[in-house]
Amino acid sequence: MSHPQTAADALAALVRPDRYPLSSAYDPAWLVALDMGPNPLWLLEDLCRDLDLRPGMRVLDLGSGRGATSVFLARELGVEVVAADLWIDPADVTAVLDEAGVGDRVRAVRAEAHALPFEPASFDAVVCVDAFEYFGTSEHYLPHLTRLLVPGGRLGVATPALRREVRDLGTVPAHVDACVGWEALAWHTPEWWRFHWEVTGLVTDVVARLQDGGWDDWLRWQRAVAALRPGVERADGVATTTDPVLTMLEADGGELVSFTLLSARTPS
Image (cartoon, rainbow, N blue to C red; front, side):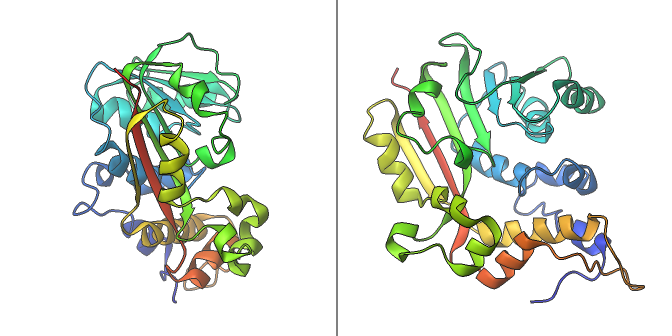
């Protein structure tokens, strides 16, 4: 499988108005510069189709990274956002928000996912893109989120998935193991997530689906990341830096790696 020939080609592949009309209005170089996980705006735009978010809602963007998803939520959906992340300085996020013109609608905070500093029923929705696999798989975690939501509140997650559970495969596939190792144990199928949430009785209307084209989306994104990452480049502009995620995706060929998009509501 060949790489895009230049960084410009790789970035151009991230503009897809036929599939992601809202995300395609954003500068792909700006998005890749904020990279902390694959194609966050594509995932969020797809996920929002299941969430029915409306202007004025209070939304927690959990694991918000450097702020791209929070900018999208405020600008495209007109919601009020709290951008919560453990690893990124809120001052750095605020600079991104202000530059994007949404600083008056988004507040950045530093928060650990198991000790969220918010009162019960603080939000109409909680959204988490490219982060839930790190803290949300425990059966003890969902109550942390549902307590933050109003009755009938929305919960939406986009998280890496394998098309078959590691338990069923008997091992982490070699090409995935070489990239993320045991962390792939948290890359669950939609069926796993649906049961994991429904059985608690804490949420209703659970929708869990494998993202259509999830592997292809991730591959396009990672090629752009690899092309723009500092490294040795040949005269023709092709980056020679080895990217373990890109290596994994190309070896996978769309057989196993994708994304689960998961949504639900708290009982009214």
